[in-house]
Amino acid sequence: MALLIACSSRAEQFAAEIRALEPGLNLRIEPNVGQAADIEAALVWQPPPGLLARLPGLRLIVSVGAGVDGLLADPTLPKVPLVRFVDPDLTGRMAEYITLQVLYHQRRMSEFRDLQTQRVWRYLPEPAASDVRVGLMGLGVLGRAAADALRPFGYRLRGWSRTPKTVEGVVSFCGPEGLDAFLAETDILAVLLPLTQETRGLVNRGLLGRLSRHGRSPLLPGPALINAGRGGLQVDRDIVAALQSGELYAASLDVFETEPLPAASPLWQHPRVVVTPHNAAESAPAAIARYALRQWRAYNSGAALDHVVDRTRGY
Ligand code: NDP
Ligand code: OXD
Image (tube, rainbow, N blue to C red; front, side, top):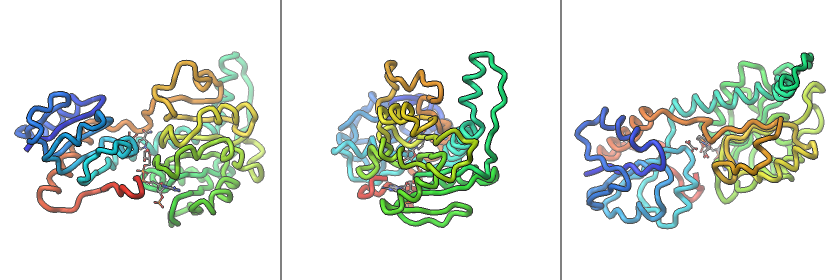
């Protein structure tokens, strides 16, 4: 039996960590697949389309990413269990990222940064956290962790998901019928949805225009958007247009329709936009190696796998 690592980045780091944990394992690193029939499990991030279909003995796929939209886009993906990465290392990093960006917008940091570039010493009043409504789109593993991290600051939390949720301190909205009410009560929108047929392009001009116009703290200059889900959830040009029109005041974007973000994108230069290179929650290779081996051992011993993707739902 062999484990194949097919990752567009960090493959050697994953291999080193796996070897340290299980030195005897027959490990292959794409493109050096060797005898394809030996390979029973694959650890993958953006593998070449069609590659996994050429492994006749494949029994398990472990995704390095928590999001599996890229894998599911390959129509040849073998119908073996597909496990996505869910781990305290990733979850903790994402909770940090969302907290950092929520605090950034609540504390009017884009304006302070602008003033600093002009060498202007000016006081700006800032709203209390308890006067700011944070709307979390997606109340799964990461949305809930973000809620747990934000709750101690006193933010007024709302969440939107496909099905109703009970999360401490979070007002739950769900489904298309709950979206308008959710947006109308949101000052800072944090998107942690998976990319599926239902969610593609959801964060567009129409949605941004429905963010809270009333009930907002007078000290908040306008709504802010944080997207750390997937670039395909948003329409980049609509975000630029909403920033220009004032429907959106500021944004923190970790993901984009095209990655890397093209140099010509106006988002790079916008004074109230924070751009990060899809690294909101770049997990440690050791955590990924531990997780992949745990899933593989579970599979071999007949134990239940964790976080198997529901291919019909798409996440
Ligand atoms: P989960 O599967 O645990 O949670 C997904 C949430 O989205 C659920 O609450 C689900 O609702 C909700 N949802 C899905 N479809 C819809 C819909 N059509 N309408 C409303 N709500 C919907 O995923 P995670 O929290 O683990 O991860 C979320 C995403 O974050 C990943 O798919 C990935 O794209 C992204 N990600 C980004 C990273 C980065 O570095 N930028 C790192 C890791 C992940 P319900 O529970 O009711 O089904
Ligand atoms: C992702 C990840 O899905 O990094 O983006 O886990």
